[in-house]
Length: 242
Image (cartoon, rainbow, N blue to C red; front, side):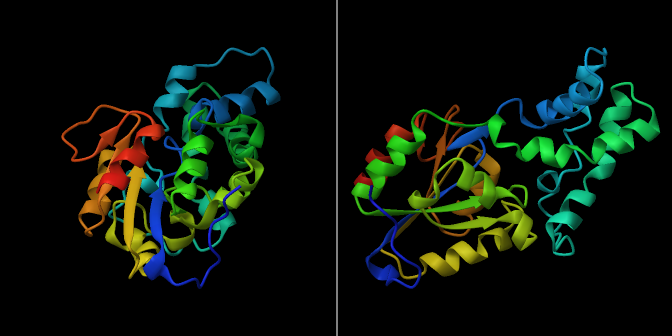
């Protein structure tokens, strides 16, 4: 296996690929709705509840829904998750639970969401990482994600492919906010080349391009982007040709 260079290596001879996490290299089965469903089914097996109403409440009030608003005050994993408890309570109540039960269930979402049994790699993720490493590219992660992202990466067995992980839950800034890219820009300064790769037009592509980083949109339609490929196997052709 080709390993990433150690921290402190001269970046002037390194080429970087900055990867988004969720939806680009891997994904959580059922996303957030599934985590809440798991909590409900474990607590009340066989009970009917309004799944569609529950899921509808999860489309707002997460940190990445308002990337223009920094959240450095959520400086620990516990504080980060505590800030989401009202979202989960609202969702459970919309699904038919009473307020007291909803508060109890909301406290169980964190464990359900980070459960490694529900995380999956895209089939082309590891082959693409290995191929690009063999071509001299070093991999970073820049993600809007939960505080447990490093543990999720460990459980997926991907640590050997990555030099470093930058996470909004630690920085307090969500892509496409310019400050979300601060650590990455510092790391790649002076490098031979650096590209952002992600599945979000706004967060990944527009956010990176606004700061002078070329970007590739993956896993979706082109949508007016300069660089696009449906699968990760196409990334090498784009970055090697540039």
